[in-house]
Image 1: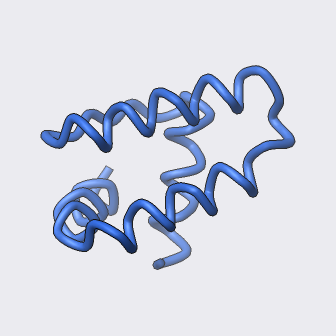
Image 2 (image 1 turned 60 degrees about the vertical axis):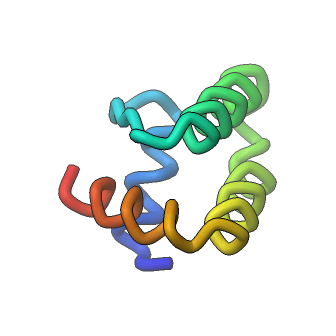
Image 3 (image 1 turned 180 degrees about the horizontal axis):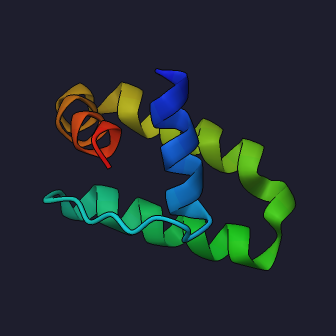
Length: 72
């Protein structure tokens, strides 16, 4: 994953950036990870691993959403 996109994803998970996907599953994952990070900011590494695993499993979602996140 591109470091700039990864940084923006981290900011989305910390609720510093707002992003909404057209994909319901990706939105649900973002909401779940945002809640986990709000409870314990030390969870960022495990949350990013979960995000990368999801995007690897669903490359179509990754292609569309990562492109959209890159332009935020």
